[in-house]
Image 1 (cartoon, protein in one colour):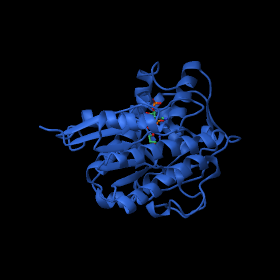
Image 2 (cartoon, rainbow, N blue to C red):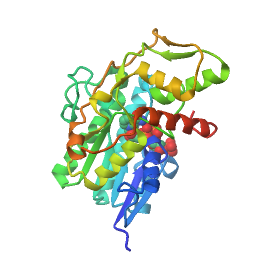
Image 3 (cartoon, protein in one colour):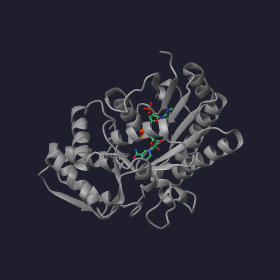
Image 4 (cartoon, rainbow, N blue to C red):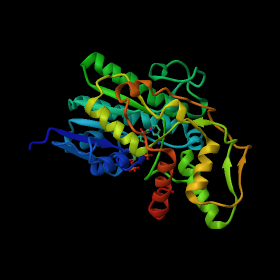
Length: 322
Ligand code: NDP
């Protein structure tokens, strides 16, 4: 049968890209590869998306009809604080090149990726999709936040002026196989899994930075992947949609650390270094819009997802990003 859709996934080697690839290849239900779909997962080795020429060459080569745009300069709290200009500029360039080249190629649909950490710092909770631009983001990640917010503005502008079908999703904190497990520059879960495994291996204490009190909603990358595939195939709005577990599934970092200790089987000394920064206390997101569309979506239980992520890292220790 003739191909109907050529779906180009930028950032295909990352945490979310690898999860989408896994679901497309392994899901036997409605999220697996559809008839007439060709999926192409690209990485920075296929071309640097900060360069307009490299971006055009990629679109010329693959001629996508649909794009899932994940490529971004991504990092944890400490990297965000240190490299604000890189986070602003690299992400602005990548997003502008991908969206404009998709427009030039008359791509039928683009789904880009925002994040709950781009919302205003001073806000009311829970946050929802209408509040992205309501005030300045947290000082620690303003470079990343402003670059991401502009994707939403660009989507609206491309739609208003040209009728382009460009939309975006807003995941909460993602974790899963293929994460960046670097201890300094990673997000909280992979960083702590790595730290805990090293503490177990070396017989040293497992020390968690901060008070353990901040609250977060975490989404397993393979659950997020299914939701991305649903958005690409069925979601019709230009306005973004939050992809998250519900408010009742928000956990504090201490609960996360406890789950990691259990998944790793760590039995040594374990404490919190309260002299280290906590970051934003909470950023509770409301997933009512998603639940309205997909009331029966089954999220993987946190402990199961944590176990799979820890086991993946142990099995892939030599090749994982550390
Ligand atoms: P990763 O850091 O795991 O992967 C980033 C991907 O982007 C890699 O495939 C990387 O390619 C690619 N990339 C980076 N810079 C460039 C560039 N200049 N040119 C081409 N490709 C590039 O990211 P995640 O999978 O974690 O994130 C995916 C998306 O989800 C991002 O847009 C991120 O902002 C968003 N997001 C992530 C969250 C999280 O908790 N991780 C939370 C909310 C949103 P290579 O491997 O070759 O370097």
